[in-house]
Structures are given as structure tokens and as C-alpha cells.
Amino acid sequence: MPMPWLRMLVASAVSTVLVGTSAVTDAAAPYPRALRDSVHTAGRVQDAGDVLRYSWPGVYFEGRIRGTGVGVVLDDPAADYDVQVDGATVATLVTPGKATHWVRGLRDGVHSVRLVKRNDTPWSTSSFGGFVAAPGGAVLARPAARSRQIEFIGDSLTAGYGNLSTSRDCDGGQLGRTTNADVSYGALTARGLRADYQVNAYSGQGMVRNYNGGSPEVNYRSFYDRALLNVPGDVWRNPGTWRPQLVVIHLGTNDFSTPINPGEPWTDESLAAAYRGAYSGFLDKLRGRYGPAATILAVGTGPFAGHVEHVVRERTGAGDRRVRYWPLDTTGLDHTGCHWHYSARDHRLLADRLTAFLADLPIRW
Image 1: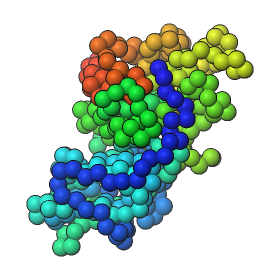
Image 2 (image 1 turned 60 degrees about the vertical axis):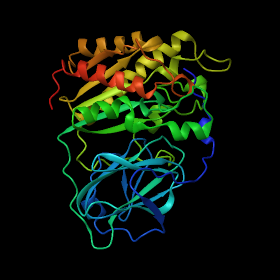
Image 3 (image 1 turned 90 degrees about the vertical axis):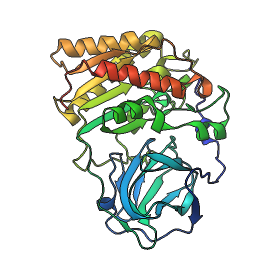
Image 4 (image 1 turned 30 degrees about the horizontal axis):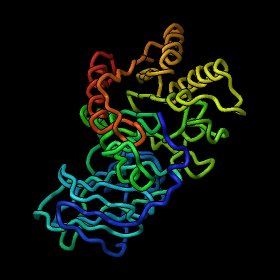
């Protein structure tokens, strides 16, 4: 499935698009005190005190305010965001830069507010400084975390790459504007199950081989442990609150979707063996991190389905009954997202199929 390797290096025009409830953009406001006490997030963030830094797509922040307006404090030159108030999207912020973005004209009262990072910008670090209330209002205590947690691991197909596009042909700007991890199959599945979630997806990356053999010195596993993807050696520090009962892995498309190029250190046989070995080692890592009770769902489809099924069969044969295989059914998908990726409709279908499959698993919610 074509995913141009350097497509993310295309610069995005800096602008702000606002829809729905009236909103304006002002100079940055002071950061609220006790930021972590006022926002709930399940995403991989680095706590810098007055800001939370992050890189992965789909990271979301939830808060509560009392009053007639809410400001969103951001410093981000690369990513796009949706702002949601009381469950409805009221603003889309395109590469917002360093500013406080206000949503005004709300009914005077208590409101829930949610900010979600739409796209994958691994070359950049994003910063969120919290929610602020309009004059006369107040920021309230953060919403409670959900008891269910799901972690999604994958590439562009999991990130929601170009899923809102009306054309399969996209340049870098179109790709950025039409990628929305908040309507990816993972986010839809999690919200339907009332679960907190992470979308730890990196476009173009494979388990051992990246799309078309690009950047062979790294692969998905090189970045998995990080909070800040563009900071070599960075390690996300789990605050102790992230204990997913379910982990879903969808990696392999980039490893096998393109022919091996001259000069790559692979044959078909050695690539398959390396993929299976790395996959098994990655499962060991996840099992060690999240414990024996977590269910790990390995997704297989297309040319790598048999390899994933092989690894799962070995694991279950060795006694790990909480590693399961999901043969992803692509029947009826239109692949009309950018560069033949899943469309928003496809993501909805996959979320429905995944939810139905999960209903038959003994997940210890």
C-alpha cells in the first residue's frame, strides 16, 4: 500500500480554521496552575511542569470548566487539533503555533472540553499548556479516568492517514489536513467501549523493514518506548496509571508491501524470519510490561497474515493463552483515503468488526 516515505517532511501552511461556536485566537495566556490536576489524558506525555509535551497521534486532553468560554493553550507548529465542547467539535486548529485559542459564547454553566491531536507529526514536539476559563469562570477538577484502557500499536493504517480525503492523490498539505486519528478504527473502538486509549502509530514504519526499505537504521521498535519521537534516547515514563487490559498490534504492512530493493540486506526468506523473530520479541516486551492478565491481539492481513498467525500459534503453544490472533477482514473496504489508505468509512467498518471480535474474548476489564 503506497505510503511515500518522505511525505511527512513537506511543510504545512500555518493557519487556523474555526467552525461552529464562535472562536478567536489571542496571544498566549498564563499557564494554569497544577496542570495535571486540571486535565485528564491517557496519552504518552512528558510532564514539564507548566506544559505537557508529546508526539504520538491521537493524544487527547479532557477537562471541565465553568463559564462562558474556554481557552486552549498550545505551542505546536506542525499538528492539527479538534476542540470539542460537550461532545461536539466546535473548532479545528490547523498548525496553531504558540497561542491561546478561545471558544466563546458558551452557555454560562459547567462544560466538558476535549482537545485531540489529529495527525502524526513525529518530526516535531507538541506542547499543551492546559485549559483556561474566560473571565468570571473557573477551571474545575479534571474528569475521572476510565477504568478500561486499550493501546493501539501500528503504522499509518492505525494513525488514520488521509482518512478524510476525497481523493487518493494527496500532497503533503492535503495529507496533513485529512488525517484524523480521532476517527481511526482504534479511537472509534475505544470510545464505543468507553475506554481510555493510546494510538501509538507511526506512518511508514515496520516491525523490521520500513516502507520500500527506507531509513533501514530504524524501525517501529526504535521509537516505541518514546514519548517524544524526534528525541533520540527519549523514554516515556509511565506514571503508573497506564495499565491497558488490551493491546492491539497492527504492524507488517510496511515490512511486506513493497518488493525488496537491490542493496537491502534481505531475501524473502530472511525478511520473514526476521519479522517473526522481532514480533515474538516484541510480544515478550509487552507481556513483561503489562503483565500476564493483559490480552494482546495480533492483527494479520495480506502478505503478513500467515507470519502473525505463526507467531501467535507458537505463543499459545508455549502457554500464553492471552495472545490472540485477529484475521482482519478487508471485505467491502474502499481504500479511498490518501494513497489507498483506509477511508473514514473503512475505519468505521473496521471498528465495528473489531468490537464484535472483542466481545468473544475473555478480556479482564
